[in-house]
Length: 421
Ligand SMILES: [Zn+2]
Image (cartoon, rainbow, N blue to C red):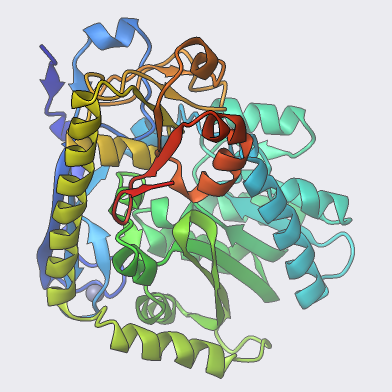
């Protein structure tokens, strides 16, 4: 029997809106309690109790911000982080292009300092370094930070704080660009982060943030991107509100395809020199009104859509099992933990999952304990169907496995509703 722990000291609920500090929050979505989505287990870990935490979203009736209620200790989530960005070739290209586009757009002078918060293995800083900038990474995942430094991207193995910002300022001077491409929604105390940014940023500097877009989460039913690392679900409206309160200004917003749809937010110090891209921002605000992101009813409808998704996928898998079809999973991303746990899909349905990251191979999925192997396993135990849990990489995965398809195999894309390809 699976043992679970209620580790109250490892998580705490937040009853105050992160964006506006208001306290008029209402619950809008409740997913199944799950372990931290990246807490992969060794065989020995399977015998130990596994901590499960609630996965519920609250909606701020004052500013319409959407946030996770239970905050799992960042020490638990990020110190032993195993997710290495550069194992995803799609991300490597994405960040190379991002570095080029950003440096062209803002024409930072040569040798300017660029700081990345949550820099992981230096996936964004490597291309900036190649372009002639000084780079500095900050990431609390000690092992990954050490490797990044050894590979030429100096990385401080700490959480970013105002005190650390002061230290960096003294040693390296101010930064022309500070980025937080996936870390921003991971951080509970954004006041502190932005205070650090204000200390470290040059007067004409740029703070660029990437975050999953609430608009896509809702319209595409991407509920599995909800997990304990993702504390904030931004709309443009709430992002503007947050930065205003913290003495910064959003001057431009873009959308990228990362993770099914992310926002790229450009902010500067109040009264900074960057031209306000009013038409870009207005376009988002208008769409958000049309999609009713500021109404709590929208989130109740979202909850119904998730339930429909669950029924459709689990019925499909049950039917395939009855037909004696063998189904394996492809990709063991964090969102796989949410999807499998919330839908109650375990090893009885999905005997194994393959993943290209060697960090995850040989381990077990958190919660469902499905074993993760390298893709060589597919040849050893040939599936009839492959459930693509890393659906944001569905195209490259299906291209890579074109012979599987040619031999009569089929792919299942699980969200927003199961699709057979
Ligand atoms: Zn609020």
